[in-house]
Image (cartoon, rainbow, N blue to C red; front, side):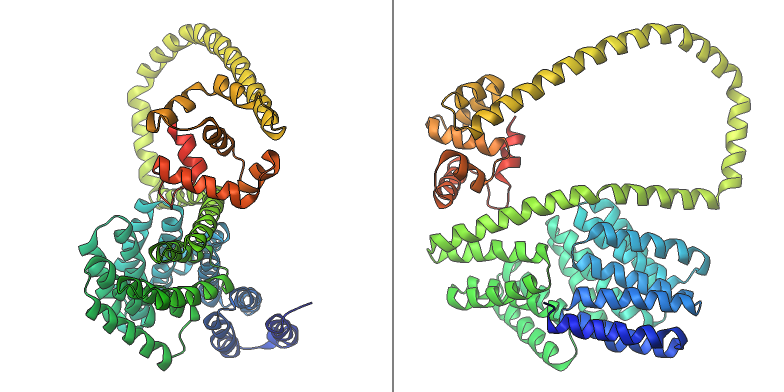
Length: 475
């Protein structure tokens, strides 16, 4: 069955199918402002995206290229909010190509800001800063009416990189610049976090939290901003040791993030809930939240890995575009280089060819050896995994034979680790999750999770780290 919100969007799309074909730009602009953006503000991101895609087609029917690019950027932003980074970058790639002919500086600034955001999510910090700075440089030359919200958005995004890098003065500078450009609930809540976490100035933190609530009530503010406000309210109350209010605020923030399908925000709030429950000595809730946090972290790592090829391709596209602009100069340089070094190249090639046959023979021999070695490693891994699944008493002995360095490293950290604990760590190293381990070793899932939690403490694995990745990095 469809939900009420999905039915409403279907109705809008159904009737728009009859009307959009003949609609003017003014009418389509009205639909974007009053329907697409309203759905986004309410947190109906997927519905907003569906209507946005419909509008793109109808703008294309009336050859309104600038609006088409604007909608591609908007779709990229919604996908980024949904943590669909691959799709977001694909939309931005199209927008960048289309705007190459239009050369609209305002659109360029928005594209670079969104590119920076996606690169930042994927961990490409240098590329993120490069694109943020491009956006800010372009925005500085725009009229005030066009740049206020753009400066607010980009300064806010760049400040998160400085926060990750622990560059607190730069973090505060960008937060203030964003707030001055366009005061809103989001900036106010992040300033509250700055004063709570980094300055321990709770009076200033409360001022910005109150301001954020006031701004939220006064305007049409996306509910996402309220979720950030409540998350930072949780930090504030936790600092006051009022754990009941902290948990209430964090749970409200978490509910919004889950509704919006924002895994990164869910992950961050779960970590805060773990810390608050731990401080309030509610061990059961603390373990529950850190387990969910770890699971989401692993999922996001895998999702990032899938999207990493897109930034690489995007860099290639950018380079090709720059090279195209200076093609004549480049060809001239290449021509001169060829003339100067032709004789040298001929001599080098002759010498190279004489050694190539010898090197090819050595490479082929080495490749055969590597293939044989790889096959042995694969066979050993499959054997150990099967022993683990069978809960065989020979599992741990065989695992030590295949991965001797792993056990030695663990015992260097804690020489008192028992065989049962080392066996559980071996299962985790092989990639088995808590449910798998419980199934194969005939134990309850809660028992396995509790033992993994205790081992984290013994080995000094921080809550935000994936145990499996930590163990693999051990050797």
